[in-house]
Length: 290
Image (tube, rainbow, N blue to C red; front, side, top):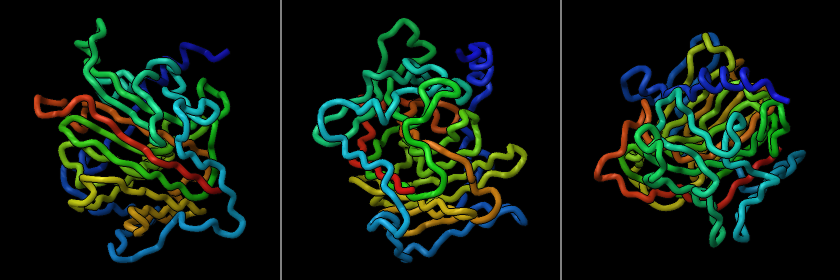
C-alpha cells in the first residue's frame, strides 16, 4: 500500500514548472543551454509530417478516436495519481478541481469542460474542470500507456478566454515530477500563441522553451505532434516542424500523456467577467507510435 505521508509530501512539493516566458519575463522564441543541449526554431515553411505513415520498425501503441459514449478506462484516468478521484495542482495556485464529471465523450470527441463550481469550497477552488492521463492511477502503479521514444499526435481544438490554461504534456511513469515535455500549452487570453517546453530531469539544469504565434491557431482544429528519438525532440504543428531540442537533456525513460484544462494560477492569472463558461477543450484523436 502506498505511503500516504510520502504522497502528501510529493503532492505539496510537486509543481508543473511555469513556462519559460514567465520565468524570464520576456517573449521567447527559443532558449539554448550552451554545452548541454541545442534548441532550434525551425523555419516555419519546413514541412515534415510526423504521423502520416507508420515508419519501419514502429508499432502503434495507442490510437484513440473516442468512439462511443464513455471514456475507455483501460487507457485513461481522469486525475493525477496522488488523488485519483478529485485532484488539482495546488503548488501552481490553480483554481480548479479536476473531477470525472467534467470529462465526456460525445460524437467522436473527448470533451474536457471547465465551469464555475457551486461546491462548499468554491472560495479556494471556484471552478471544476476535466483532465485525462494515460499514467498510473496510484503511486508506483502501472501506467495505462507509457513509452520510451516514439511519436505522438493529438488533434484538438483549444478554448479561449482569460484565465484558461489548456495543455498537452508528458510526465515520467516513475511518478517523479521531472523530466516534463510540454507538447503544447496556451493561455486563453492569447490563444494565437502556442508554447512548447522541455524541463529536464536535472532540476539544476535550465529549461528549454519556444513559441509560435499564428492567428489561425486561435480557431478551429489543429494537430500537435512530437517526434521523440534518442537525443532529439522535434515539435510539429499541423505537420510542420516548428522546433527541436537535441542533447543529453532529452529524456530516455518511460513517460505518459496528460491532457488538461487548468483554470487560473500563477501563469495564466484568474478568469474575469469576459471569460466564457463553460469552456471546453475538445480532442478528436490521440495516436502514439513506439
